[in-house]
Length: 201
Image (cartoon, rainbow, N blue to C red; front, side, top):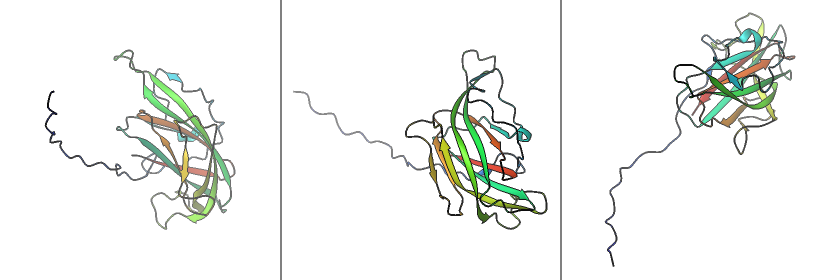
């Protein structure tokens, strides 16, 4: 009978969640007041180039992100001369990644993830924040209600944390599923203007 192998001395490796903060999709923070209809769910299924980042049409595109497990998104809303509280907007999210068939030719594959219904709460952004809407007279407040529909994200699906119609900041979280970028399009609805923020971890 052979003897059992000697125990191995394995190196200890710390395991924890990557620490990253939320950041706006643009520097400085770029708000959108787009009333452009949302692109079809299959719009970015296969592209020869990365979709064009264009907040004037509500489309924000981020690529080249480092390896991460999760993507989180939150939003602020603003309104000209009025209170955005309880006003609504919509959005649509795709994850993006490269097609590796030809290393000399860029191609991008996109996966529709879900649709978003957004409702603004009464919690204002901090005074003098760099995230505030740049136009004087616009009130900037956090989206406190996020409803996910047509969820095609990786099981068990998107999860909303942080708030549920209680006038705090709501966050939608999903599995990044091996991608290195995403595109989100926002339609202002009755809110007036929107600011998306994201983090990966």
